[in-house]
Length: 286
Image 1 (cartoon, rainbow, N blue to C red):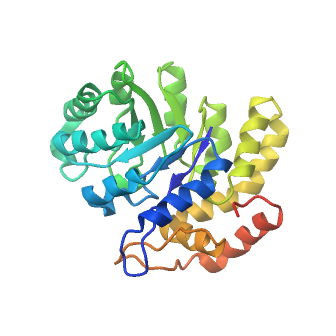
Image 2 (tube, rainbow, N blue to C red):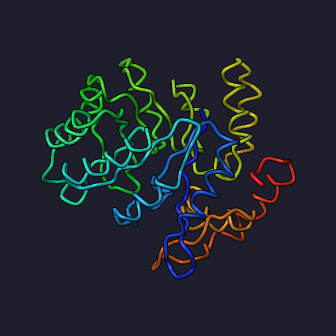
């Protein structure tokens, strides 16, 4: 499966735009296998609870859905879990981070198990140390995988050794990578697909790569990965600011980052030719 972490549109003054949010989801959903709301590229940490509720209320996805939960305490996480359950979505959960040094492995276990036991939704772990500055220790992941309601993990670290651990331990988790530059390597180590920022712009070649791998066409998959790597790497470095700028360029209602983040990325002059090349090949969402 190829799933995009959908950006959350704000206007140029930073005001949340639920209608643009709905329109963006409707424009992209036909091209992908599911949607993630309020992930890292969805600026989930920039939204109030009222805004989160308003944003989900306008959505009516027809494909599998995840909702990001990026909270600091179990009480906050439970409130966000209720929002995800209202949409019938799985919860994609980052570890608490502000007091991470005081949490320790036992605290991580209490947090994720507490959420899994609090509601009815499936809980997925979200390992994204570039943003959270927190590592999910591998023994903790292995222990959490034993919980019947913790069913998946999105690993955006790009560390293939972690995916090798998941495979070697035969963890009962659906593994998805969030790191486009190492997408093929992740598939080779057992990942089922990608939850990729690039899929907001150009899901078609990533779906093609997944299909090539699944059909055993390894050489063709390697060649396509080579073509995609500069695009994925540039977007990963530019982050949500570059992603939103690219969506606006394609005429999609991606909106702007919420201040104080800039409306334009310094990486745009380098990324624009890559995006235009994908557009010429019919790979972009229009």
